[in-house]
Image 1 (cartoon, rainbow, N blue to C red):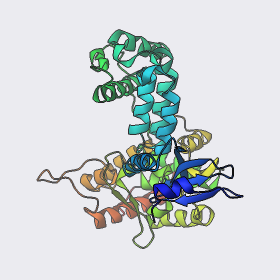
Image 2 (cartoon, one colour; image 1 turned 180 degrees about the horizontal axis):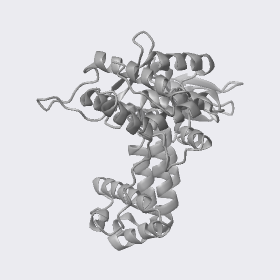
Image 3 (cartoon, helix red, strand yellow; image 1 turned 180 degrees about the vertical axis):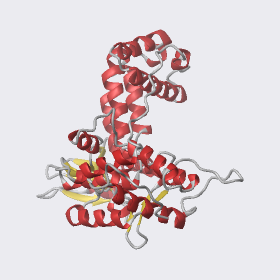
Length: 407
């Protein structure tokens, strides 16, 4: 039963702290010294947390319930109310929460919760390293285009042109959030179009010659590393999905019955669910690794702890160890390898290949394919691709590859 104001007022302390439950996780904590505290117990991202809502009688039962409802609304929107509280405390010392840093941290806590861990880390690093030192204490409404450009020029001056462009995009999002929340009149980043140097567009290195691919695959077989890193390396050419999608693979996403990897929309660049048919070779690799990491969430857990997935540099470092630097082959390059050989050597349908790469593909009527489109054909293609890779990685054939159709 929910608490009444009388029950809260007359609740007496005991030898040990005790709790009086209200509803929805709200409770009154009564310390042995008689102090009474409002608390909200909730779960976020699978973890149990507690949020302080005030001290009784300064905060009445009615007010505590109002604060509790606000926190529950935040939780329903996918926002951790505890993190919001931390941001509020952190920004309280800044000028009336109107500084660039205060608004940026509020934007980050509100808008970045659903982004990938790598994207959140990169964004926060840009804010704290490049933008806050120059703009952090400035009232956000007073920041103009020349000031923002000065901060971006500092990044550009150290040769990080692409970082400068990303920082400009991040700053623009912060300013637009400030406009939407009534803390600024306009976004000055829009005035800087063309002001920064153009980044050099460099295609990610990839090996597409069958003989060279065969030698790479042989080298990968001999890689001496942790089982998680080696399996992620060996699966990269078999699956040819984006490196971030592979390293964040979860055991719950593996459909053993249907022999496929089912990736939820929130993990995909195009924000559409995706299915990757698994060849017998891929299934074998996964089953071997399942004996080691199958009790955890991630297929490829980090060496620093099973609560996070493999670092974005795991497969890249493995390639470097094998003698393949960023100018020769990259983890992302396995996608270009598959795209080229599936089309030019094995002759599979381009729309199947593009669909399997999770690119936006439309049918003759301009309608986007759904995730199950041509699934049977794509499954045969993925098995044919795995068989082809097995064929060209034979050391005896690596220097004189004979290509064939495996469909």
